Image (cartoon, rainbow, N blue to C red; front, top):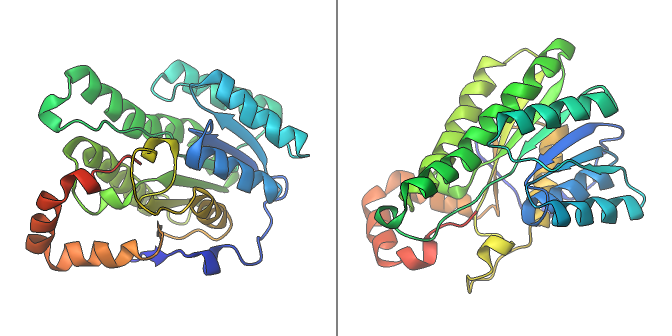
Length: 268
């Protein structure tokens, strides 16, 4: 298994350029998505911000434009095929191509699986997994035609370490889809990469009393993957050791997670 650790020292040096690349970032109204949109724009990309929260999305896009970058907000529900198609077509109409897709839109419920309603189950599967499939399927033909493109999906450390049944089901799915698609597209000129964050300081994690890095760490890893594609990057890097511990000692991991579930249920 090829997993690259990403720390502050090895993902920020040099800040290579993405000049004039056209990038779509979903879940861009806050957190990792907003930080990623800024990082891609800072490196020269023209960024299309997509999310459901219209007001917050417009604020993020306006902030980038006022800073001298090029950003466009297109409100999008990634679970709605019509809206996904509109996002893709509008981007192509404005810019002529899509070079980078960052599948970041995601959510989590904090209840146990049995406490989730069937509506909640459908919603998280649609947002976290179906949205990735739909948008990737929409942008891929143009990338394949040009033999160029980068697809980066935000999975999670919870795609390696099973903690929460519903959330992990979706993130294992994102990771499995991305790894399989990467193999299917080998030699096509289109790269597929995964970034798997641990706990990161985002609005979804505001309830947690943990020391967490900011979303900028993940954003820099994503920007670097757009330039130098890799199979997967785990951020922060120390989570790679926990993933390896889970692989080697699953019984001990079971005991730890059972006794600390309230602290380790993921929300990213």
